[in-house]
Length: 264
Length: 255
Image (cartoon, rainbow over all chains, first blue to last red; front, side, top):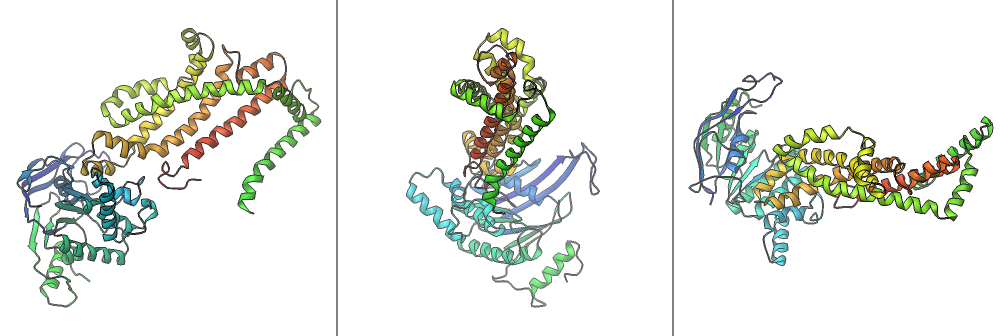
């Protein structure tokens, strides 16, 4: 199960950066509010895409849901229970370099299965997930021997093999070339339809959000509040190149909302 | 040029040129053989030292001390470095002491070492231990502190125990840095052993050099130096091979 209720969540941090940056909001040592009164309810099996300007706290929210970080106030309940820390029930898929570089692909995938006693079953399961992400033949490769797209896939396999309730993906496609990006996006959508897990995706790509999400949530600038929380009841595959569809209109609206006046 | 050929031949070439220059310097400078013995004279006395076995005895004695002191330093230094790298409070407490002791030359410890350990192998081993311990601790601490924090998040996410974090994250993550540190440290240890053997012992390459100087046998002094250099190359080569083991190098082939 992966039913998430975020209510009245606030997050502040203390600015510890001594050298000032242009867009700094607070002087050194002062409290910076990042997230303000966030209320979200996510259904089990929903794929929710989070959009927002950079530095708005999307990733911070994800880290709180994953249990890596604590909120300043408010609560995050997963299946009715307050989160206390990281757990293998909700796996965080890192932006990059989440694979342990000293382990081969299959050793990395094995991390979530290391308590399984039956060695034969374990091997089969590892193989099953490696095949699911189409990495067969690369089991004994080290991460540095793989391309960017393959790294993301291996990490996805490692996350899925523990059968988590929730997958949290922080900009899963950043840094990939265009075609790999498209292909991986398609695979994540297929995987979601097939496995039906709750997936939270942080992205800065509006098209990703519109193509993938069951829902899109848009954050404002820091201190972030929810600007838009909208269900996307469109069937897959989605196409917004046809003008005047509702999706195309929404796309223009989102671009406008995020400061791009004409989505050219 | 063929690279294998180059790798095999080039060192011989440079050593040959060095020997020729040395010979030429001796001949044309007209220096007395008590001031600068030529290569042939040194070569002959080397054969002498090999024949009576003393060069082996001294080399083994030195290698034993270096090995003992170095292993001791690694066995205590690496765990301490891991603790200092992982625990903020431990590093606040111990780092000042380590950085205070670190710049004190091991040779400054000679008087104390002799008082505490008497004469024989023990003070020499102690000095080598001191020379290797601090570089190993500091490199380990730095290596642990520079582990990508994402890996600890991954560990937490997959419910790792503290032991598993150590075994699966910390140790493999620092292995390449540790091997580099050991490679540099073993050279320092080897430098210090010669100095350490000039006190309070009756064997070892340092003793050989000191003894030969007292007997005005500069050819044997140079033999001592040559053997030290050759063993130094050998030690470095061994450490480098260690760094090339697949699992230690994360499967990355290092030159």
